[in-house]
Image (cartoon, rainbow, N blue to C red; front, side):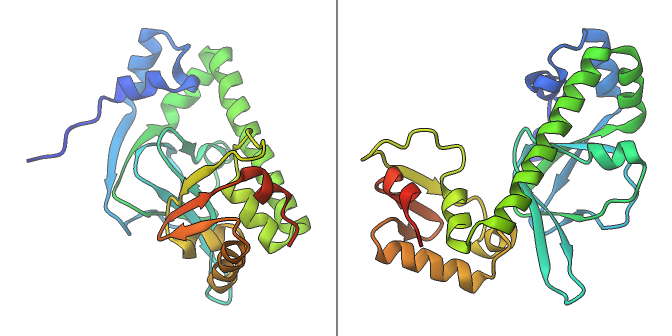
Length: 229
């Protein structure tokens, strides 16, 4: 049975970036948008390829990464549903500085450059939404650099487990399903896989977490947040 075709118009309308567009603008954007399906491990683009638009994740996971001169892989970002990427290099008209590879089977939309540029010229509100999204991403990257520079390895792991967590009162618990392999997460946090495993072991021994495969249970969020390695 062939895979179900993605309703491109419906997907675009769900995202804040495109919600304010008129039906005519949406139709114009849809005309320049193509669905792309990847199998696990398949490359979307290589470092040095020229962008011709940007991508929107529908399902699955894709990693952005590059290889160091020593041959080690550094994961820059892990992308999931409803996230976009590639806008900045599209505007700069420069080659991709990273490669993109599917971590799972994935479905994406490729939004054409020409259609985006026409919308930017005709709709200031769309331009503001796009700039806001890029600004948020830049702020996140700055936070990541700060984390790598100023926080210990254990603090980075704890921050990753508690990301987006606002409820830290004593006794509140948390269950985290790691979105990908521990090796990829270690690279994302600028750690070696051995260091990540050691930190998980230390946190488990301290009774701060329990780990079963990719599932991590935090019995007391406040206690983990206060932990000083």
